[in-house]
Length: 568
Image 1: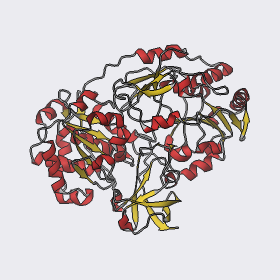
Image 2: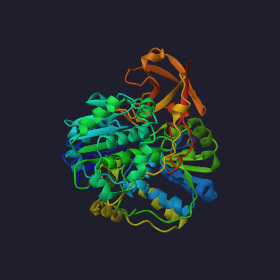
Image 3: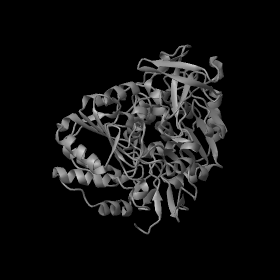
Image 4: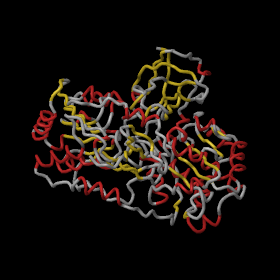
């Protein structure tokens, strides 16, 4: 084992915490974002019961036998009748090694995202790349607008660095950060782009736009404003649920201040997610918040790998399937790595039906819901037993992980599995593990500053409120402090406002045109009256969501749905 005691949190969250092994106890490092503290989820990860034995048809077998079965199955299956499906259970860069094998083998691969794809496409269209500003620009900002993001929960370490600043929250849910904010705009779901246009129009009316920035750094601002002024203010008030008084209060709070916008996933979980995000980013540009010479900016889920060469990538002509539309039933062999599509992918029933028709191989560290449908389970070794590098998508932080303990007998790392299969099939070898690790560790990226911001010039968004009635609800999801996606302590309740007439503990059937499921009601006046709220990882929510791709990024659009509720 290496004498270096650094450990990187591999979990799918913004901060990419750096920890250290102090005599067998993992503690937060004093470096950068982490500031000596571990979040609840990292602490939960350290207590996980990892898989210790391979399984075939629910019977324990040796790792060697499992690898033989996998090799035999791959050799007896036509490559195009297999799919490689990779999740985000571990975001370490070294985890991508198996994709190299399956690319050379010829499996179908996925494209798009279950998470941030639409928003990323929108930001890239306006700015050329999805790159967050440096943390210094956030630390130096006076006011932070939290838009569709539960900032104090999803970025707890970063929040602690800025918790004394002035906050404005834009969200249909009264999130923990909304309760800490001086202004909370309870925007109606899927009207965030209208609110951005509303605010842009008011900015022009009050001469609040940054004319110098618009002249030097942008193209198309006149077109954008023309779109914004096409509707009366009262129309914006009616559809967004945000009053003119609230909008003017926002401008009073940001006048003469440097402003940062923390933009979350909630705004873009729709068919036109990229357009919605471009409108919000456009408002930020109209106000001059993207000025490279001042504090502030807009933060989203950045392209954490920007400027890095993928060390295990290899070119192939593989068929690529939009990840929300994957039908495992179309493949004789489904290899699932570090993912739990039974819970995390849209349209749970379709996922289950597909898995039942395929030979499913699960490769991961813990037993999850998808393992219930796996024919073969291969245990990956703990993140404490392999070297890795973790890049943050919330900031520009890099965390390193060195081997802290020997791997459990009967487990195998991602690099080892890929190398084993490549050797058996006589494919092109991977670069060495040390070479890849050292490249990622030592690489210093020079991030570009904004040169030109291109405003969106045409907006075609079909609002959900056109089909909204008194009898149906918007579906809203957000992450919980005590869980991460489908990991750790899961809350399977549906949260409703008390005005809905339901009672705590009621068992209800919730349905959409995609499916139905039962839930237990928990009442909370933090929920907007028109919404049904579910924490991410709820095992039943995705029975209700569409397994269709958005318009621009081949990504999921979980909230593009209205749901009905009735007592069960």
